[in-house]
Length: 507
Image 1 (cartoon, rainbow, N blue to C red):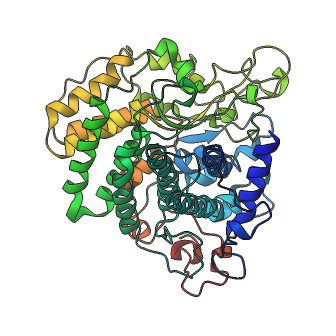
Image 2: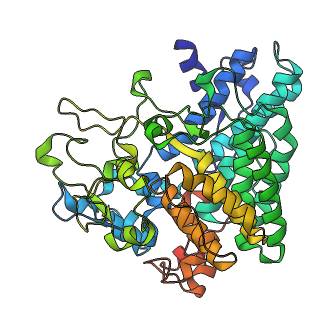
């Protein structure tokens, strides 16, 4: 433990953010106390884990999954009778895209720290750390074989590209670089270009890392080929939504990657009866996750998990402050996406009040690993799932449908439907199938932080048929789907610009 702490301190000391005297100026590792850090394979592994911890730290600063991926399209309302109800009204600020009001100081929900979502420094810490690691591996590290070198570089490239993808979906255009010890000021780069560079980068590393690990403790926790494929699929589908002239190229790339993922036979959909194992983490369904366990002393911010908003007694205690959930999904919306009564996700992931418009609603999808005795006001002991097999099967299906390969798309959709014991898709192809796949992703991935981004990349956010918070074409083109960027990004970078939509008042 002492050694890990030292590693963390050394790594943290090696990063200098855009707010420093020089843009992204980095103190070389060999100039630091504890020089010659990368002296063994163990040092490399410790560094990889620390990069993941820093990346997870950005999610753990606030109620991240709900704020960025679930609430902004208006499906969620707060329960006025809940404990500290005014502090939960933030879901409606998000639901009408009032981000400036959300992060304005003096709000009853200030303890959620939503303003930290606007600060991209942590992501650049990870990117710079990954760049340095790749450079050090190229120089040569004692005890690291050529095979291990390729695998470690692939892991570093994955976490670097994951941070770029995360920032693109939050902020749009971002500063892109991959050289170690970067210090030159750079402007923001068009995000389609950034993602294309990430895709090309990952494609060069994909074959150097295994699909899975012999050690079951590493499943999903350490990046693997499935992780890289999933990220490449997600980036291709994002670009398909914004680079229409080349959409078919992205769809075909996603379909090819999906075929590779399925053909590997390295992953599977677990039965719904084993759902607690999926959300607990390290399962055969996990492609990449930030694994968390109280057994390891992991410190998750009390309000960070999305489950915190949608559970009440007996999953949250004490009873007198948890008689209702803090928030609920609109009954109208739940009826819209869960029309098939045979779907076992209804009874497995929700309580009997799934269609009610009040705090009796509970989303039990994240509830199976919680305390059941004592007076613990603790969130369920779950992993933070980034990519899992069910979501990528549906992304594969979406790409196939957009290529006109309807029969193959239906096969992929029905894999997910079969696991849910829901009726197989029996409709037509074309638009009908594409719409069904969108709804299937809404069902399968509810609460996992993908819904709002699906609305944005498919442009369904522009229609009241799909969203309660409709963006006009003008607002969308001006970046209303993004988050504001902290003014700290302007420090010592004359090329930097913030997001115009939010600078101009968010209207």
